Image 1 (tube, rainbow, N blue to C red):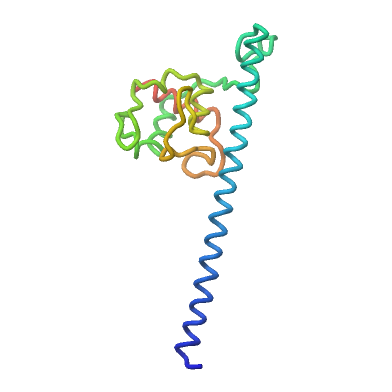
Image 2: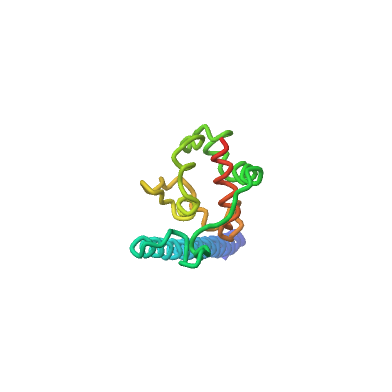
Length: 167
């Protein structure tokens, strides 16, 4: 065998191995995101069941009958300034400054500002609004803002929601 053939063989083996490893790591990332989405969907399902049960028993939504907030209902106040920072880092590219819309729809004075915090959370994590499923181009943030790998906290979601309400 000549040197060129040996060199090409080594190159092809290394290239194929690298492509396989990149493919596998992509699958792992995808699987992790899918697991996070499934977990968020399960939590949202439990929240929906709790709301349905509360409605049928006459209890107020978000209450366990003792005046304490239920575990499934988001009970935090948002910080507009922190929400603006989250928006700038994650939403600005598609929804533009001030939420005027661009690739993504207008968010300023939009229906999303009227959703409950739980509805807003489900839309961010699962892409489901109270009236429709969001387009596939809208990221599902179950993997966290800025690719952190951690689901957004209730505080981050409340901050972002508060910022959108302020527009």
